[in-house]
Structures are given as C-alpha cells and as structure tokens.
Image 1 (cartoon, rainbow, N blue to C red):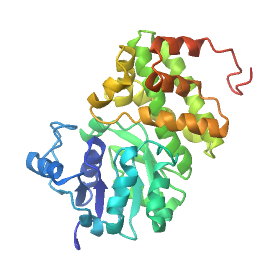
Image 2: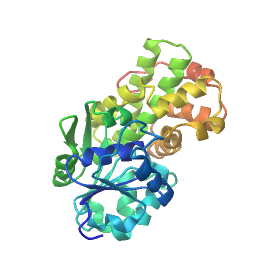
Image 3: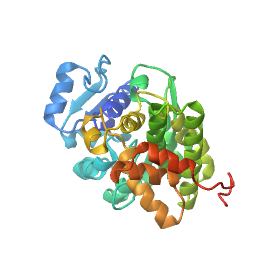
Length: 338
C-alpha cells in the first residue's frame, strides 16, 4: 500500500495494541490483526475490549488483516506476537516488508525445537534484515502503559544505529528507552524472567511470605545470569531493565500472566486445565522447556527452571518442588561451588 503509514505493528493483542497507540503519537500506524474478523471487531469497537477494555484506539491507528498493507512501513515494524507464533507471523508478512525498516521483536520467549531467540527467528526468515533486527524488553505491563503510566525499557541491537532508530521512534515522555548492544542478554533476560515470575506467584499463593519471594526471585536472577553468560550474554544486562527490572514487575503484579499462572498452579490446578483459561499467553510455561534444554547443552545448573518444568509437565506438586529447592545442599552464593 503505497503512501500508507511508515510504522507498523504485527499482532493486535494487549502489547501490540498498546505499542500501536504509543507509536501513533508520533505518526500514523498500521496494526496487523491475525484475521479480518479480529480486525473488524477492533475497528467497530474502537478499542481492544478483550485485552485493554476502556482504552480507546487512536484514530491514527489503521487496523487491517492484509499483510500487504505493511509495505509502506519503511521506518519500523514491531512484532508483538507470542513466541510460538513468531515464525509463522514473520513468514506471513516477509514478502511485504520494506527493505529499510527496523524489525523490532517485543516477544519474550525462545522458540521450541530450534532454541532460537526471537530476533534470530526473524533473521532466519528475512535474511537481508539480519542487520536491522532489534529487541525490546523491560518491566512493561501493557495495561499500565496503555493508560499513560510511566515506564522504561531497553532496546537491544548489535548495531547502535539500529537501536537509536527504534528508541527515537518509540520512546516518549512516559516511555523512557535505553540502548544496549547486548541483544543476547536483553532477549534471554526477558524470556527467562517469566519462569521466575511463575515461582514467585506460586510462593505468594502458598503464603510462604515476602522473605521467600525475595529469595526465590534473587536466586532466579542468579540462575538467569549464569545461563545467559554461558550463552555469550553480558552478566550486567541481567542487572538492568530486561533482568531485575522485569523480574520486579512480573513477579509481584497481578497483571502478570506468568505470576497468575504460578498462583493457579499453587492452588492445585494442573497446567492442562489452566492453559486455555489465561487472558493471553503465559510465555514462561513454554520458555521453561527451552531453558532446561539450553541449560543441559551449556552445562549450567538451573534448579528453579527444573522445578517449574517438573510441576508443569511432570505432574509434580508445587509444595514438593519448593521443599526440594530449599533442601538443596549449601553452595557459595557467587561461584556456586559446594
């Protein structure tokens, strides 16, 4: 579509709709929904009633289900779809993408099977865009940001010019953005912290207290950092917005789907019963499978991820998992040595 908006968002869920609204403050935006029925509902309602009730869509957001409408987006295309849908979403729009636009992933997950990060998935399907991919991560609860509440995030990209372009377009007075060349760390931190948020929710539901929640989130951060460092990430990235910043938000907020999943698991419901009832995707439930596999590949201990995996996919009782975590032999806090 020649002459259309130079900015676009793929994915009209809570986060995609929020980012489209943010971008529309600077310029018109194309918002690509999964199908025409969804697009028509958004256009008719003038809001995303399922995910962001009461938050109106800006008139400068054009909702469509036609990938060819992305052709005019020469500046920035944001991929705001669940990690499990990233590859199929990229494939569906690859032929319509501009050769100059920055491709920004805001999904916080790792692809099952390939164990690729989201920007790696994008680059594998759009090879000529490998130098134009970036990732956004941080403590970003969509509902709060959609209501204009202040937040901050980090854009990771190997090329500093790419991250600068994304920051200049998406950043604003209530959405402060930083840059980081450690795209590996930015993406891994964003994905792995969802596993920690599940445990935090479970600990809260069990009534274990704030000390226990603080302990589990802190040790979760250490676990994330160990795995990230083994995969080439800068450990300092995990002490930033994508790591500890996001953990603080998702491990304590009722708005966090991963936190809610932990609460539900601790109440006695199995994952098979919970999966279809959450308001959106709890990425940690799928990321944990990839995390455990990556940990084995890189020979890194991930006891928290192991226990989450056992509860979700092996039928282990949540309380038994907490007991097993506490019963582990004492180790040096920094080196992990016995």
